Image (cartoon, rainbow, N blue to C red; front, side, top):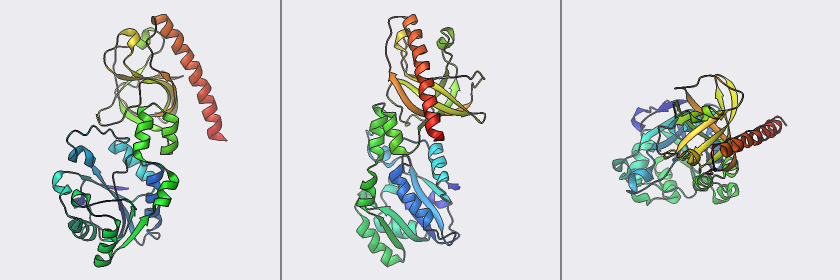
Length: 315
């Protein structure tokens, strides 16, 4: 997949099949549209293009927006590449871009820059300055400028009944199983392993502290989760704590993973952690001994889940 970091970088070598949107999560609803894009290229007669934006438009247009996103740019790139998209354009969204009229956007960008043969879009998509144009306007412009418009109907979208907002809400509530069902893959967090206070090592549960650089990334509700990661081409399972470590007087939220049956040094590595299951909520224990007993139970419960997870995956 070719990646372009602005619209001006892209040069069409043939007519394109295009869709656009933020595609946060690249969930089942998005895949309905994205699969239609790849299927419409007619085995190379046209090339597929996804136009997306960063920052998220709400971050720019809503002064007090505190929106958190499901994907970092790197995670989104990986997911789109898996779907067979040929070209990904990540355009920097700003107030100047937001002021383009609907016709300026269609004429100057879709037609002149992307040379579109067809645009595939959801029935409720709005565009142009103040989002005043809708699918009917797009169809009208298509007739004027000579491109097709394929609409994803409300029935198709509603049949899937998935939205990025639903997934965000599930993750914020720690409902990882539900979120993963909507997404179609385990929810990931990615970051560098940094040195922490190393308290886990003193009680027999050494952890890798994950530092997430992107402050917009949505973090699940505080609790203990079963996770997996690919480290040096090896799938490694573990249990992850998100929270403040209240039993030992923690004051700052941390993300710590205790990997099972794994003792390699992973400091300074960038790891992708896939969250599989919530074990329990964060809890302040009476003392360290009670905490150690609970961690031992967490490990046992994690191993039970992993055994069942692997058995289901192979069936």
